[in-house]
Length: 189
Image 1: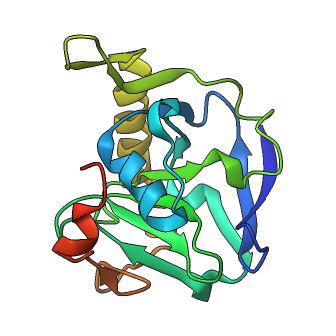
Image 2: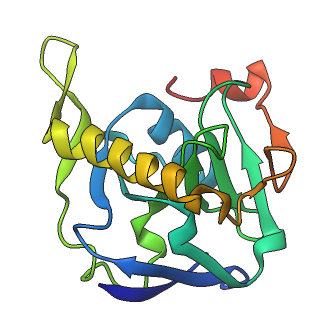
């Protein structure tokens, strides 16, 4: 396991992913329309059919050395995933469930100084199929690992060790912005 530095594109936000390894998280490529829309919304660049690479772990594995106050949060719906981005340079950074009690942190892998410690992509989500449906690869790792890590964090109390939520209120550290219908109409949702 390794501690891997990360930063946003401009370097204003910087931190460390602690204990990174293929066993402590899951390197996943997601093809869902929401991940694609989040990247397009924040950067203006459409990942199209390449998918979005994330490392799924728990929030206690992520610490900030500077710039945490530059995190901004948006969600495509009040009850959907929270998406943290850098307010300084706009890049997408993390995805979380809207509650800290289910400890899940999806970190964009392009933020990491190196992806060597997390290993290659181990599973894929929402892989488009010719008939218009989608499927997952390595489903047990994709969902089972996420549920197991969240369960352990809940039982041990590690879910409370988060830089993304105020534990007393259960609210994210920044107000959640929900894009307007006009903004959403431009996205592949």
